[in-house]
Image (cartoon, rainbow over all chains, first blue to last red; front, side, top):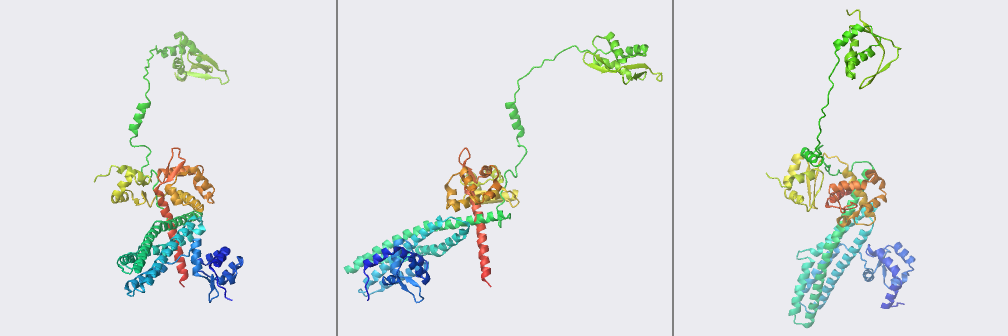
Length: 407
Length: 183
Protein backbone atom coordinates (compact mmCIF):
# COMPACT_ATOMS: atom_id res chain seq x y z
CA UNK A 1 0.00 0.00 0.00
CA UNK A 2 1.33 3.40 -0.98
CA UNK A 3 2.29 5.32 2.10
CA UNK A 4 2.90 9.05 1.56
CA UNK A 5 6.05 10.45 3.05
CA UNK A 6 5.72 13.44 5.34
CA UNK A 7 8.32 16.25 5.41
CA UNK A 8 9.42 15.56 8.99
CA UNK A 9 9.81 11.86 8.16
CA UNK A 10 12.10 12.86 5.32
CA UNK A 11 14.17 15.10 7.57
CA UNK A 12 14.38 12.41 10.25
CA UNK A 13 15.48 9.88 7.64
CA UNK A 14 18.16 12.25 6.40
CA UNK A 15 19.30 13.11 9.88
CA UNK A 16 19.53 9.43 10.89
CA UNK A 17 21.44 8.35 7.77
CA UNK A 18 23.41 11.52 7.12
CA UNK A 19 26.79 9.78 7.13
CA UNK A 20 25.79 7.23 4.51
CA UNK A 21 23.96 9.80 2.42
CA UNK A 22 27.03 12.01 2.49
CA UNK A 23 29.16 9.15 1.19
CA UNK A 24 26.76 8.56 -1.67
CA UNK A 25 26.73 12.29 -2.35
CA UNK A 26 30.53 12.59 -2.32
CA UNK A 27 30.95 9.49 -4.50
CA UNK A 28 28.59 10.91 -7.09
CA UNK A 29 29.67 14.52 -6.88
CA UNK A 30 32.13 14.46 -9.74
CA UNK A 31 30.02 12.28 -12.03
CA UNK A 32 26.63 13.96 -12.26
CA UNK A 33 25.46 12.04 -9.18
CA UNK A 34 25.22 8.76 -11.02
CA UNK A 35 26.67 5.84 -9.08
CA UNK A 36 27.58 2.50 -10.54
CA UNK A 37 25.65 -0.37 -9.08
CA UNK A 38 28.66 -1.94 -7.32
CA UNK A 39 29.75 1.33 -5.70
CA UNK A 40 26.20 2.09 -4.63
CA UNK A 41 25.75 -1.39 -3.09
CA UNK A 42 29.03 -1.16 -1.23
CA UNK A 43 28.27 2.22 0.36
CA UNK A 44 24.76 1.05 1.31
CA UNK A 45 26.13 -2.08 2.95
CA UNK A 46 28.83 -0.25 4.86
CA UNK A 47 26.37 2.30 6.22
CA UNK A 48 23.34 0.10 6.80
CA UNK A 49 21.33 2.01 4.23
CA UNK A 50 18.14 0.29 3.19
CA UNK A 51 17.52 0.40 -0.55
CA UNK A 52 13.75 0.25 -0.01
CA UNK A 53 13.91 3.33 2.22
CA UNK A 54 16.10 5.20 -0.23
CA UNK A 55 13.58 4.55 -2.96
CA UNK A 56 10.61 5.35 -0.74
CA UNK A 57 12.06 8.73 0.22
CA UNK A 58 12.90 9.16 -3.47
CA UNK A 59 16.53 9.81 -2.63
CA UNK A 60 17.65 7.71 -5.57
CA UNK A 61 16.17 6.37 -8.75
CA UNK A 62 17.43 3.46 -10.77
CA UNK A 63 18.61 4.13 -14.29
CA UNK A 64 17.82 1.73 -17.14
CA UNK A 65 21.53 0.80 -16.98
CA UNK A 66 21.05 -0.50 -13.41
CA UNK A 67 23.12 2.41 -12.06
CA UNK A 68 21.61 4.68 -9.44
CA UNK A 69 21.12 8.41 -9.75
CA UNK A 70 20.70 10.73 -6.77
CA UNK A 71 17.75 13.05 -7.08
CA UNK A 72 18.52 16.65 -7.86
CA UNK A 73 16.30 18.03 -5.08
CA UNK A 74 18.37 16.13 -2.54
CA UNK A 75 21.76 16.83 -4.09
CA UNK A 76 21.01 20.56 -4.25
CA UNK A 77 20.12 20.50 -0.58
CA UNK A 78 23.18 18.43 0.33
CA UNK A 79 25.42 20.73 -1.71
CA UNK A 80 24.07 23.56 0.36
CA UNK A 81 24.49 21.59 3.60
CA UNK A 82 28.00 20.35 2.98
CA UNK A 83 29.15 23.42 1.06
CA UNK A 84 30.45 21.06 -1.51
CA UNK A 85 29.42 21.16 -5.10
CA UNK A 86 30.23 19.58 -8.39
CA UNK A 87 32.06 21.97 -10.65
CA UNK A 88 30.10 22.87 -13.74
CA UNK A 89 31.65 23.42 -17.09
CA UNK A 90 31.34 26.95 -18.46
CA UNK A 91 29.06 25.75 -21.26
CA UNK A 92 26.52 25.30 -18.54
CA UNK A 93 26.71 28.98 -17.60
CA UNK A 94 26.61 30.05 -21.18
CA UNK A 95 23.52 27.96 -21.65
CA UNK A 96 22.06 29.55 -18.56
CA UNK A 97 22.93 33.05 -19.75
CA UNK A 98 21.26 32.26 -23.08
CA UNK A 99 18.08 31.16 -21.41
CA UNK A 100 17.97 34.38 -19.36
CA UNK A 101 18.28 36.33 -22.58
CA UNK A 102 15.54 34.31 -24.19
CA UNK A 103 13.22 34.73 -21.21
CA UNK A 104 13.84 38.48 -21.17
CA UNK A 105 13.09 38.76 -24.89
CA UNK A 106 9.85 36.87 -24.38
CA UNK A 107 8.85 39.19 -21.56
CA UNK A 108 9.52 42.31 -23.61
CA UNK A 109 7.52 40.99 -26.53
CA UNK A 110 4.58 39.65 -24.53
CA UNK A 111 1.42 41.69 -25.13
CA UNK A 112 -0.96 39.58 -23.11
CA UNK A 113 -0.84 41.09 -19.62
CA UNK A 114 -2.25 37.90 -18.12
CA UNK A 115 0.92 36.02 -19.07
CA UNK A 116 3.32 38.67 -17.76
CA UNK A 117 3.35 37.66 -14.05
CA UNK A 118 4.44 34.12 -14.95
CA UNK A 119 7.17 35.39 -17.24
CA UNK A 120 8.48 37.83 -14.62
CA UNK A 121 8.59 35.15 -11.91
CA UNK A 122 10.29 32.75 -14.27
CA UNK A 123 12.93 35.34 -15.22
CA UNK A 124 13.50 36.11 -11.55
CA UNK A 125 14.06 32.43 -10.84
CA UNK A 126 16.45 32.16 -13.77
CA UNK A 127 18.47 35.06 -12.42
CA UNK A 128 18.57 33.62 -8.94
CA UNK A 129 19.58 30.17 -10.21
CA UNK A 130 22.31 31.70 -12.32
CA UNK A 131 23.69 33.67 -9.40
CA UNK A 132 23.50 30.69 -7.03
CA UNK A 133 25.39 28.53 -9.48
CA UNK A 134 28.13 31.06 -10.06
CA UNK A 135 28.39 31.63 -6.31
CA UNK A 136 28.55 27.89 -5.54
CA UNK A 137 31.09 27.34 -8.28
CA UNK A 138 33.33 30.16 -7.06
CA UNK A 139 33.20 29.00 -3.44
CA UNK A 140 33.88 25.42 -4.43
CA UNK A 141 36.84 26.46 -6.56
CA UNK A 142 38.22 28.52 -3.68
CA UNK A 143 37.95 25.55 -1.34
CA UNK A 144 39.46 23.14 -3.86
CA UNK A 145 42.32 25.52 -4.57
CA UNK A 146 43.03 25.92 -0.86
CA UNK A 147 43.15 22.14 -0.57
CA UNK A 148 45.43 21.91 -3.58
CA UNK A 149 47.64 24.60 -2.12
CA UNK A 150 47.91 22.90 1.25
CA UNK A 151 48.80 19.49 -0.12
CA UNK A 152 52.55 18.97 0.15
CA UNK A 153 54.48 19.28 -3.06
CA UNK A 154 56.15 15.94 -3.45
CA UNK A 155 57.80 15.14 -6.69
CA UNK A 156 55.20 12.55 -7.59
CA UNK A 157 52.29 14.94 -7.09
CA UNK A 158 53.87 17.92 -8.86
CA UNK A 159 52.81 17.04 -12.37
CA UNK A 160 49.32 16.26 -11.21
CA UNK A 161 49.15 19.64 -9.48
CA UNK A 162 50.37 21.41 -12.59
CA UNK A 163 47.82 19.52 -14.67
CA UNK A 164 44.98 20.22 -12.21
CA UNK A 165 45.79 23.91 -11.94
CA UNK A 166 46.04 24.20 -15.71
CA UNK A 167 42.77 22.35 -16.24
CA UNK A 168 40.89 24.46 -13.72
CA UNK A 169 42.30 27.67 -15.12
CA UNK A 170 41.68 26.84 -18.75
CA UNK A 171 38.35 25.08 -18.52
CA UNK A 172 36.72 26.68 -15.48
CA UNK A 173 38.15 29.95 -14.29
CA UNK A 174 38.97 31.77 -17.52
CA UNK A 175 35.66 30.85 -19.22
CA UNK A 176 33.73 31.68 -16.05
CA UNK A 177 35.44 35.03 -16.00
CA UNK A 178 34.65 35.45 -19.66
CA UNK A 179 30.95 34.87 -19.00
CA UNK A 180 31.00 37.54 -16.31
CA UNK A 181 33.29 40.08 -17.95
CA UNK A 182 31.99 39.88 -21.50
CA UNK A 183 31.04 43.27 -22.88
CA UNK A 184 29.03 42.16 -25.92
CA UNK A 185 25.32 43.04 -25.95
CA UNK A 186 24.53 39.33 -25.50
CA UNK A 187 26.65 39.01 -22.35
CA UNK A 188 25.04 38.47 -18.97
CA UNK A 189 26.12 41.82 -17.59
CA UNK A 190 24.58 43.67 -20.52
CA UNK A 191 21.41 41.59 -20.17
CA UNK A 192 21.21 42.43 -16.50
CA UNK A 193 21.51 46.11 -17.23
CA UNK A 194 18.78 45.76 -19.80
CA UNK A 195 16.50 43.90 -17.37
CA UNK A 196 17.28 46.47 -14.73
CA UNK A 197 16.37 49.46 -16.86
CA UNK A 198 13.31 47.74 -18.27
CA UNK A 199 11.99 46.64 -14.84
CA UNK A 200 12.63 50.06 -13.37
CA UNK A 201 10.74 51.83 -16.12
CA UNK A 202 7.87 49.35 -15.94
CA UNK A 203 7.61 49.62 -12.16
CA UNK A 204 7.21 53.40 -12.51
CA UNK A 205 4.83 53.54 -15.43
CA UNK A 206 2.77 50.34 -15.12
CA UNK A 207 -0.79 51.27 -14.33
CA UNK A 208 -1.75 47.86 -12.94
CA UNK A 209 -0.57 47.99 -9.30
CA UNK A 210 -0.03 44.20 -9.16
CA UNK A 211 2.17 44.27 -12.26
CA UNK A 212 3.99 47.35 -10.95
CA UNK A 213 4.78 45.42 -7.76
CA UNK A 214 6.07 42.43 -9.77
CA UNK A 215 8.31 44.66 -11.84
CA UNK A 216 9.59 46.35 -8.71
CA UNK A 217 10.60 42.89 -7.41
CA UNK A 218 12.27 42.05 -10.68
CA UNK A 219 14.11 45.36 -10.57
CA UNK A 220 15.34 44.61 -7.05
CA UNK A 221 16.36 41.10 -8.03
CA UNK A 222 18.27 42.25 -11.10
CA UNK A 223 20.03 44.87 -9.01
CA UNK A 224 21.05 42.35 -6.36
CA UNK A 225 22.20 39.79 -8.93
CA UNK A 226 24.22 42.45 -10.71
CA UNK A 227 25.95 43.54 -7.51
CA UNK A 228 26.67 39.97 -6.47
CA UNK A 229 28.03 39.07 -9.88
CA UNK A 230 30.33 42.08 -9.80
CA UNK A 231 31.59 40.97 -6.40
CA UNK A 232 32.10 37.39 -7.57
CA UNK A 233 33.84 38.61 -10.70
CA UNK A 234 36.23 40.45 -8.39
CA UNK A 235 36.84 37.31 -6.34
CA UNK A 236 37.61 35.37 -9.50
CA UNK A 237 40.02 37.96 -10.86
CA UNK A 238 41.67 38.93 -7.59
CA UNK A 239 41.73 35.58 -5.79
CA UNK A 240 41.00 32.53 -7.90
CA UNK A 241 43.15 33.37 -10.87
CA UNK A 242 46.24 34.56 -8.98
CA UNK A 243 46.02 31.63 -6.57
CA UNK A 244 45.81 29.06 -9.32
CA UNK A 245 48.45 30.80 -11.41
CA UNK A 246 50.67 30.85 -8.36
CA UNK A 247 50.19 27.18 -7.62
CA UNK A 248 50.85 26.31 -11.22
CA UNK A 249 54.00 28.44 -11.41
CA UNK A 250 55.37 27.26 -8.05
CA UNK A 251 54.78 23.63 -8.96
CA UNK A 252 56.47 24.18 -12.30
CA UNK A 253 59.48 25.80 -10.62
CA UNK A 254 59.79 22.85 -8.28
CA UNK A 255 59.42 20.42 -11.16
CA UNK A 256 62.22 22.30 -12.93
CA UNK A 257 64.40 22.15 -9.83
CA UNK A 258 63.74 18.41 -9.52
CA UNK A 259 64.81 18.00 -13.08
CA UNK A 260 67.98 19.95 -12.39
CA UNK A 261 68.82 17.90 -9.29
CA UNK A 262 68.17 14.74 -11.26
CA UNK A 263 70.70 15.70 -13.91
CA UNK A 264 73.20 16.64 -11.18
CA UNK A 265 72.68 13.25 -9.54
CA UNK A 266 73.38 11.52 -12.83
CA UNK A 267 76.36 13.80 -13.35
CA UNK A 268 74.91 15.05 -16.59
CA UNK A 269 74.71 18.52 -18.02
CA UNK A 270 71.14 19.88 -17.66
CA UNK A 271 69.12 20.02 -20.89
CA UNK A 272 69.21 23.78 -20.76
CA UNK A 273 72.42 25.54 -19.75
CA UNK A 274 72.13 28.25 -17.13
CA UNK A 275 73.24 31.77 -18.02
CA UNK A 276 77.01 32.10 -18.04
CA UNK A 277 77.25 34.57 -15.19
CA UNK A 278 80.48 36.47 -14.87
CA UNK A 279 82.88 35.64 -12.09
CA UNK A 280 84.11 38.17 -9.66
CA UNK A 281 87.10 40.23 -10.83
CA UNK A 282 87.16 38.30 -14.02
CA UNK A 283 88.26 41.21 -16.11
CA UNK A 284 89.73 43.68 -13.76
CA UNK A 285 91.92 41.47 -11.65
CA UNK A 286 95.30 43.08 -11.15
CA UNK A 287 98.19 42.18 -8.91
CA UNK A 288 98.42 45.78 -7.81
CA UNK A 289 96.29 48.86 -7.95
CA UNK A 290 97.02 51.57 -10.45
CA UNK A 291 97.63 54.07 -7.70
CA UNK A 292 99.88 51.79 -5.65
CA UNK A 293 102.77 54.24 -5.59
CA UNK A 294 100.74 57.10 -4.20
CA UNK A 295 99.20 54.79 -1.62
CA UNK A 296 102.51 53.27 -0.65
CA UNK A 297 104.07 56.69 -0.23
CA UNK A 298 101.17 57.81 1.87
CA UNK A 299 101.46 54.69 4.00
CA UNK A 300 105.16 55.17 4.51
CA UNK A 301 104.79 58.85 5.18
CA UNK A 302 102.02 58.35 7.68
CA UNK A 303 103.11 55.30 9.59
CA UNK A 304 106.82 54.86 9.15
CA UNK A 305 108.24 58.13 10.40
CA UNK A 306 111.53 57.31 12.15
CA UNK A 307 113.06 59.52 14.76
CA UNK A 308 115.99 61.49 13.48
CA UNK A 309 119.25 59.90 14.63
CA UNK A 310 122.63 61.57 14.77
CA UNK A 311 125.60 59.33 14.33
CA UNK A 312 128.96 60.78 15.31
CA UNK A 313 131.81 59.40 13.34
CA UNK A 314 134.55 57.98 15.49
CA UNK A 315 137.84 59.42 14.61
CA UNK A 316 140.49 56.91 15.83
CA UNK A 317 144.24 56.39 15.10
CA UNK A 318 144.73 53.93 12.34
CA UNK A 319 147.77 51.77 12.39
CA UNK A 320 149.05 52.00 8.85
CA UNK A 321 152.53 50.79 9.62
CA UNK A 322 153.80 47.82 7.70
CA UNK A 323 157.23 46.20 8.17
CA UNK A 324 159.90 46.92 5.64
CA UNK A 325 159.82 43.76 3.60
CA UNK A 326 163.16 44.43 1.94
CA UNK A 327 165.00 44.76 5.22
CA UNK A 328 163.27 41.69 6.54
CA UNK A 329 164.24 39.72 3.47
CA UNK A 330 167.89 40.71 3.86
CA UNK A 331 167.89 39.71 7.51
CA UNK A 332 166.28 36.42 6.65
CA UNK A 333 168.76 35.74 3.91
CA UNK A 334 171.58 36.34 6.43
CA UNK A 335 170.07 34.03 9.02
CA UNK A 336 169.54 31.08 6.69
CA UNK A 337 168.93 28.29 7.32
CA UNK A 338 166.11 29.11 9.73
CA UNK A 339 164.82 26.15 11.76
CA UNK A 340 161.41 27.58 12.61
CA UNK A 341 160.39 30.15 10.01
CA UNK A 342 157.12 31.35 11.59
CA UNK A 343 158.61 31.87 14.99
CA UNK A 344 161.55 33.65 13.39
CA UNK A 345 159.10 36.00 11.66
CA UNK A 346 157.43 36.66 14.98
CA UNK A 347 160.69 37.33 16.75
CA UNK A 348 161.82 39.65 13.97
CA UNK A 349 158.55 41.63 14.08
CA UNK A 350 158.86 41.92 17.82
CA UNK A 351 162.09 43.87 17.36
CA UNK A 352 160.29 46.24 14.98
CA UNK A 353 156.89 46.80 16.66
CA UNK A 354 155.04 45.89 19.85
CA UNK A 355 151.73 45.39 18.06
CA UNK A 356 151.91 42.33 15.86
CA UNK A 357 148.67 41.96 13.89
CA UNK A 358 147.74 39.30 11.36
CA UNK A 359 148.08 41.80 8.58
CA UNK A 360 151.68 42.64 9.61
CA UNK A 361 152.49 38.99 10.17
CA UNK A 362 151.29 38.00 6.68
CA UNK A 363 153.14 40.83 5.05
CA UNK A 364 156.39 39.15 6.10
CA UNK A 365 155.45 35.47 6.26
CA UNK A 366 154.36 35.54 2.62
CA UNK A 367 158.12 35.44 1.78
CA UNK A 368 157.83 31.74 2.39
CA UNK A 369 156.64 31.50 -1.19
CA UNK A 370 159.49 33.58 -2.56
CA UNK A 371 161.49 31.63 -5.11
CA UNK A 372 164.71 32.63 -3.31
CA UNK A 373 163.90 30.32 -0.41
CA UNK A 374 163.00 26.71 -0.09
CA UNK A 375 160.70 25.49 2.67
CA UNK A 376 160.93 22.11 4.32
CA UNK A 377 158.10 20.64 6.31
CA UNK A 378 157.86 17.53 8.45
CA UNK A 379 154.47 16.03 8.35
CA UNK A 380 154.40 14.52 11.84
CA UNK A 381 155.96 17.51 13.65
CA UNK A 382 153.55 19.03 16.20
CA UNK A 383 151.85 22.38 15.55
CA UNK A 384 152.34 25.27 17.89
CA UNK A 385 150.26 28.31 18.76
CA UNK A 386 151.45 31.77 18.01
CA UNK A 387 149.62 34.59 19.75
CA UNK A 388 149.21 37.78 17.77
CA UNK A 389 147.37 40.92 18.90
CA UNK A 390 144.15 40.09 17.04
CA UNK A 391 144.30 36.30 16.46
CA UNK A 392 146.01 33.17 17.62
CA UNK A 393 147.49 31.13 14.82
CA UNK A 394 148.09 27.41 14.89
CA UNK A 395 151.15 26.82 12.74
CA UNK A 396 153.43 23.96 11.75
CA UNK A 397 157.16 24.13 12.16
CA UNK A 398 158.74 25.02 8.82
CA UNK A 399 162.43 25.01 8.01
CA UNK A 400 163.64 27.54 5.47
CA UNK A 401 166.83 27.19 3.41
CA UNK A 402 168.25 29.04 0.48
CA UNK A 403 167.01 27.84 -2.88
CA UNK A 404 170.13 26.91 -4.75
CA UNK A 405 168.36 26.66 -8.08
CA UNK A 406 167.06 30.24 -8.01
CA UNK A 407 170.52 31.86 -7.83
CA UNK B 1 79.09 61.23 -26.52
CA UNK B 2 78.96 61.75 -22.77
CA UNK B 3 78.80 58.85 -20.35
CA UNK B 4 76.51 58.98 -17.35
CA UNK B 5 78.40 59.80 -14.14
CA UNK B 6 77.63 56.29 -12.80
CA UNK B 7 79.14 54.65 -15.87
CA UNK B 8 82.33 53.36 -14.27
CA UNK B 9 80.53 52.00 -11.21
CA UNK B 10 77.93 50.29 -13.41
CA UNK B 11 80.53 48.64 -15.62
CA UNK B 12 82.59 47.57 -12.60
CA UNK B 13 79.62 46.07 -10.80
CA UNK B 14 78.24 44.20 -13.78
CA UNK B 15 81.57 42.86 -15.06
CA UNK B 16 82.31 41.61 -11.55
CA UNK B 17 79.26 39.39 -11.78
CA UNK B 18 77.05 41.56 -9.61
CA UNK B 19 73.36 42.07 -10.13
CA UNK B 20 72.03 45.62 -10.20
CA UNK B 21 68.72 45.88 -8.41
CA UNK B 22 65.71 48.14 -8.51
CA UNK B 23 65.43 50.84 -7.08
CA UNK B 24 69.18 51.60 -7.19
CA UNK B 25 70.16 54.66 -9.20
CA UNK B 26 72.31 52.38 -11.34
CA UNK B 27 69.23 50.34 -12.24
CA UNK B 28 67.41 53.44 -13.42
CA UNK B 29 70.40 54.60 -15.47
CA UNK B 30 70.86 51.25 -17.24
CA UNK B 31 67.14 50.90 -17.81
CA UNK B 32 66.99 54.38 -19.32
CA UNK B 33 70.07 53.81 -21.49
CA UNK B 34 69.33 50.15 -22.17
CA UNK B 35 70.04 50.30 -25.90
CA UNK B 36 73.39 52.00 -25.34
CA UNK B 37 74.49 49.60 -22.60
CA UNK B 38 73.37 46.56 -24.57
CA UNK B 39 75.59 47.65 -27.47
CA UNK B 40 78.38 48.79 -25.18
CA UNK B 41 78.76 45.48 -23.35
CA UNK B 42 78.39 43.44 -26.52
CA UNK B 43 80.88 45.50 -28.50
CA UNK B 44 83.41 45.96 -25.69
CA UNK B 45 83.42 42.59 -23.93
CA UNK B 46 81.13 40.35 -25.97
CA UNK B 47 78.72 40.13 -23.01
CA UNK B 48 74.93 40.06 -23.12
CA UNK B 49 73.01 42.53 -20.98
CA UNK B 50 69.74 41.37 -19.43
CA UNK B 51 67.27 43.88 -18.03
CA UNK B 52 64.38 42.16 -16.26
CA UNK B 53 61.12 43.87 -15.39
CA UNK B 54 61.10 42.06 -12.01
CA UNK B 55 63.79 44.57 -11.04
CA UNK B 56 67.22 43.16 -11.72
CA UNK B 57 69.98 43.55 -14.31
CA UNK B 58 72.94 41.27 -15.02
CA UNK B 59 75.48 40.30 -17.65
CA UNK B 60 76.07 36.90 -19.15
CA UNK B 61 78.73 35.50 -21.40
CA UNK B 62 78.67 32.41 -23.54
CA UNK B 63 82.27 31.77 -22.65
CA UNK B 64 81.89 32.11 -18.91
CA UNK B 65 82.72 28.98 -16.98
CA UNK B 66 81.92 29.12 -13.32
CA UNK B 67 80.72 26.62 -10.79
CA UNK B 68 79.05 29.15 -8.51
CA UNK B 69 75.70 29.14 -10.30
CA UNK B 70 75.58 25.37 -10.32
CA UNK B 71 76.15 25.23 -6.57
CA UNK B 72 73.63 27.95 -5.87
CA UNK B 73 71.04 26.22 -8.07
CA UNK B 74 71.52 22.98 -6.17
CA UNK B 75 71.20 24.80 -2.86
CA UNK B 76 68.08 26.62 -4.01
CA UNK B 77 66.51 23.51 -5.54
CA UNK B 78 66.94 21.48 -2.36
CA UNK B 79 65.80 24.32 -0.12
CA UNK B 80 62.64 24.98 -2.18
CA UNK B 81 61.98 21.26 -2.39
CA UNK B 82 62.04 20.92 1.38
CA UNK B 83 59.75 23.91 1.79
CA UNK B 84 57.37 22.49 -0.80
CA UNK B 85 57.26 19.14 0.96
CA UNK B 86 56.48 20.94 4.21
CA UNK B 87 53.56 22.63 2.45
CA UNK B 88 55.23 26.05 2.64
CA UNK B 89 54.80 28.58 -0.13
CA UNK B 90 58.46 29.24 -0.93
CA UNK B 91 57.78 32.05 -3.39
CA UNK B 92 55.72 33.95 -0.88
CA UNK B 93 58.31 33.43 1.85
CA UNK B 94 61.19 34.43 -0.44
CA UNK B 95 59.35 37.65 -1.14
CA UNK B 96 58.76 38.73 2.43
CA UNK B 97 60.79 36.68 4.91
CA UNK B 98 64.19 36.90 6.50
CA UNK B 99 65.82 33.53 7.04
CA UNK B 100 68.15 32.55 9.84
CA UNK B 101 71.17 30.73 8.42
CA UNK B 102 70.88 28.21 11.23
CA UNK B 103 67.28 27.45 10.30
CA UNK B 104 68.25 26.91 6.67
CA UNK B 105 71.18 24.73 7.69
CA UNK B 106 68.86 22.50 9.68
CA UNK B 107 66.37 22.19 6.86
CA UNK B 108 69.18 21.13 4.52
CA UNK B 109 70.62 18.70 7.05
CA UNK B 110 67.29 16.93 7.38
CA UNK B 111 66.87 16.67 3.63
CA UNK B 112 67.20 13.39 1.78
CA UNK B 113 69.40 15.33 -0.65
CA UNK B 114 71.80 16.11 2.17
CA UNK B 115 74.73 14.35 0.55
CA UNK B 116 74.41 16.36 -2.61
CA UNK B 117 74.32 19.56 -0.60
CA UNK B 118 77.31 18.54 1.48
CA UNK B 119 79.29 17.70 -1.63
CA UNK B 120 78.94 21.25 -2.88
CA UNK B 121 79.14 23.08 0.42
CA UNK B 122 81.74 21.34 2.54
CA UNK B 123 82.87 22.66 5.90
CA UNK B 124 81.22 25.97 6.84
CA UNK B 125 80.12 26.12 3.23
CA UNK B 126 76.63 27.54 3.65
CA UNK B 127 77.91 30.79 5.14
CA UNK B 128 80.51 31.02 2.39
CA UNK B 129 77.97 30.29 -0.33
CA UNK B 130 75.63 32.94 1.03
CA UNK B 131 78.53 35.31 1.38
CA UNK B 132 79.44 34.85 -2.29
CA UNK B 133 75.88 35.43 -3.40
CA UNK B 134 75.54 38.35 -1.03
CA UNK B 135 78.41 39.91 -2.98
CA UNK B 136 76.53 39.23 -6.18
CA UNK B 137 73.42 40.67 -4.52
CA UNK B 138 71.18 37.66 -5.01
CA UNK B 139 70.89 37.37 -1.24
CA UNK B 140 71.35 40.14 1.29
CA UNK B 141 72.49 39.82 4.89
CA UNK B 142 70.05 41.62 7.12
CA UNK B 143 72.02 41.84 10.34
CA UNK B 144 75.55 42.85 11.27
CA UNK B 145 76.54 39.36 12.39
CA UNK B 146 75.51 37.95 9.04
CA UNK B 147 73.39 35.24 10.61
CA UNK B 148 70.21 36.34 8.87
CA UNK B 149 69.50 36.99 5.21
CA UNK B 150 66.80 37.55 2.64
CA UNK B 151 66.56 36.83 -1.06
CA UNK B 152 66.54 39.77 -3.46
CA UNK B 153 64.51 40.03 -6.65
CA UNK B 154 67.48 38.55 -8.53
CA UNK B 155 66.53 35.10 -7.23
CA UNK B 156 63.73 35.19 -9.81
CA UNK B 157 66.33 34.47 -12.47
CA UNK B 158 66.80 31.00 -10.96
CA UNK B 159 63.04 30.47 -10.82
CA UNK B 160 62.77 31.56 -14.42
CA UNK B 161 65.39 28.98 -15.36
CA UNK B 162 63.55 26.23 -13.43
CA UNK B 163 60.31 27.19 -15.19
CA UNK B 164 62.00 26.86 -18.56
CA UNK B 165 63.38 23.46 -17.59
CA UNK B 166 59.91 22.34 -16.49
CA UNK B 167 58.31 23.65 -19.67
CA UNK B 168 60.85 21.76 -21.73
CA UNK B 169 59.93 18.59 -19.89
CA UNK B 170 56.20 19.14 -20.26
CA UNK B 171 56.75 19.77 -23.96
CA UNK B 172 58.86 16.63 -24.28
CA UNK B 173 56.20 14.58 -22.53
CA UNK B 174 53.32 15.87 -24.59
CA UNK B 175 55.30 15.17 -27.75
CA UNK B 176 56.04 11.70 -26.47
CA UNK B 177 52.33 11.01 -25.89
CA UNK B 178 51.37 12.52 -29.22
CA UNK B 179 53.82 10.28 -30.99
CA UNK B 180 52.50 7.29 -29.13
CA UNK B 181 48.93 8.13 -30.02
CA UNK B 182 49.57 8.53 -33.72
CA UNK B 183 50.03 5.08 -35.18
